[in-house]
Amino acid sequence: MGHADSLLALGGAFLAAAVLARLGNRFGLPTIPLFTLAGILLGPHTPGLVLVRDSHDFEMLSALGLVLLLFYLGLEFHVDDLKNGGRRLLLAGGSYLVLNVGAGLAFGFGLGWGAREALVLAGVLGISSSAIVTKILIDLGRIGRPGTKIVLGVIVVEDIFLALYLAVLQPVISGAQGGLEIAWQVAKAFGFLLLLATAARYGTRLVARLIHVRDDELLVISFLGAAVFVAGVSEYLGVADAIGAFMVGLILGATPSGPRIRRLVHPLRDAFAAIFFFAFGLAIDPGDFAAVALPVAVAVVLTLAMNIAAGLVVARLYGYRVREALLIATTLLARGEFALILAAMAANAGLDSRLSPFIAGYVLVLAVLGPLAAGRVHSGGEPEEKGAATTDDRAPAEELKQSEERKEEVRAPVTAPDR
Image 1 (cartoon, rainbow, N blue to C red):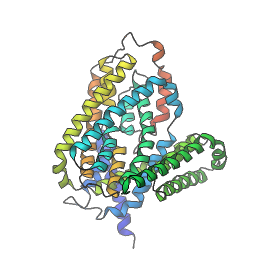
Image 2 (tube, rainbow, N blue to C red; image 1 turned 180 degrees about the horizontal axis):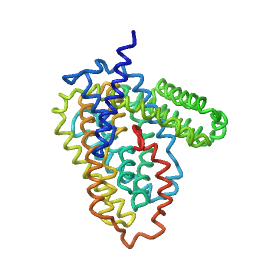
Image 3 (cartoon, rainbow, N blue to C red; image 1 turned 180 degrees about the vertical axis):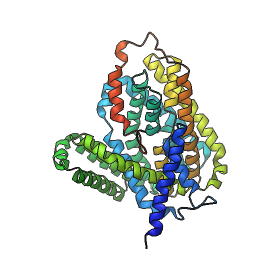
Image 4 (cartoon, one colour; image 1 turned 135 degrees about the horizontal axis):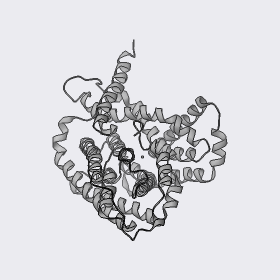
């Protein structure tokens, strides 16, 4: 009976998250903010029913959810997607990041919460929720339409930025003192990242032989052990555990066992990711939302403006009309899993306590606004391309459908069929 309270809390967390997610699905809402909302409503800071008194009870399960999220993201990273898109796709993704990350960094410094907090906010405001983005594309039937391949390409560019960004962020927010120590920590992070990247580039055949096994049970134990172990090594070296998990996924995803691993890890990712988002909500005090309401409103307006600007830039690169630019902008508008990961990292590093409620409120608003805005623009009519866009610039519908099928599972870190 010693574990009765823990089991009741865990079971209640799963059930509460499932109930809210089912209700949200009726209105076309994504599950990520609803899982977080369930944690807020049933946490120790909200009057009424308190399911979990101490969010630390979920600490290890939440950490495992984070590892599996980034591991799955690495599994679905395909360099070929970037190569096939050419220079324009790289320019499109880079333009999106420059505008949104730059605006996020300026916004962070403008708040005056601190330099480390500003660096966190740059990522929060700058990177889309790949889970929600993919769900929007599926729900609106955008597979095979102009602009879809661009949206997925931007997500791939964001994946690359994510690994580099985390390598810089973790040493900076971890409390390293002095420029020399920070430089050493960043160099160590990039060195570890380079080591794993080298393994991904030249060690795929060896890894494929080591990981290959016909029995699904043994394969699950093998890839789960590898992901968690390397994530632990990353954390031990002072590098974000997320980097280690992401790179292990990248390495294993390139092996012949990659498709099986993606299929087998899917339910594990769904379950533990739900706990990660729920546990994040447990730490949020709803009373703190009032103090960050204005910054949240400003950030939402800023993100919307930067997304529209980025959409117009991308549309101009590809010769698309304004409606397609607005579709690209609104499809990429939502923020979700990565923003909450950054919030958890910031909380663990002891940064400004206002970050968590700010990020929670910001994610909740945009996770709802994004799908609604994309649906509204989509319902206005199908966009047409300018004559400047040639047939060669447009991928065939079948190619896009295959690309989406490959990404459909990964871009839903919480529920199927929901970066």
